[in-house]
Image 1 (cartoon, helix red, strand yellow):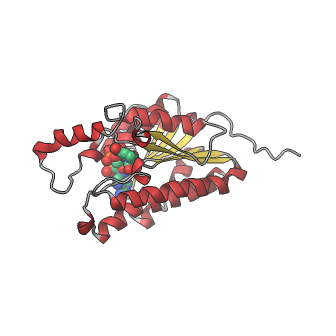
Image 2: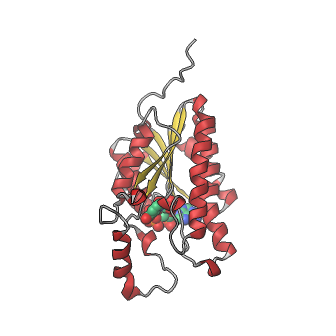
Image 3: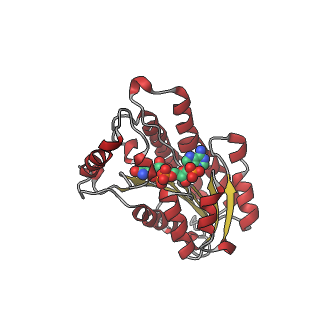
Length: 257
Ligand SMILES: NC(=O)c1ccc[n+]([C@@H]2O[C@H](COP(=O)([O-])OP(=O)(O)OC[C@H]3O[C@@H](n4cnc5c(N)ncnc54)[C@H](OP(=O)(O)O)[C@@H]3O)[C@@H](O)[C@H]2O)c1
């Protein structure tokens, strides 16, 4: 008897997909690319307006779910509402994330908790619920960070959350494989979004360009990444039928350097 798990019908990227962080940056690029592939989406953010602008691209195929993922009670409603709206779930992309740049002496417990809630606990619990909703066959993709593997100043709490998320991906992949549910991560270097412009300790607005230049130089390819370059990798992993438990660097060579 074959132990092979039957595949889902059609690629998840053209199916029913829940996307968090769809309002801006990387998550928005992923949602836009999924819409181009013909997917039907449930999209999550804290503010309806940017999600409404996204849904204008294909109003009949986008359900908007406004939710603060740091709120445990509110986020527990996300997967049931997505399943009800979409009639099931083939894919889950967890792209929401938050960073508070703080030097070690200034790390605040509230900020540490928020980053753990949004970057680690929310994706873990939503993935658990999403896998239950998928039943047999499906695909989950999260966005980790090279900071999970390589330290940089002022990102201690964020790095802890992303390292936990990488462990989560491997653990979920192992236990969900018998049900044909794959779990993978994209591991970006520095991508040009709002996140990298969030205020840093001692940062002077005039120095922002110098700081960006420093960040560019971290990458052997000599530039920052673009949200669409991460989206392409996320869509590859959503559909890669014999890939599970990996964290795929999209980092301009940062981890190799
Ligand atoms: N940019 C980088 O260099 C980089 C590098 C490595 C990994 N990443 C990861 O990539 C993912 C996307 O980051 P990005 O650069 O696109 O960041 P971004 O432009 O700042 O967007 C962050 C997204 O997360 C959502 N979000 C944040 N806190 C939330 C909360 N409490 N509840 C619900 N949604 C929340 C935001 O929604 P709202 O509109 O509601 O705020 C927004 O859609 C994150 O997981 C990030 O950690 C980014």
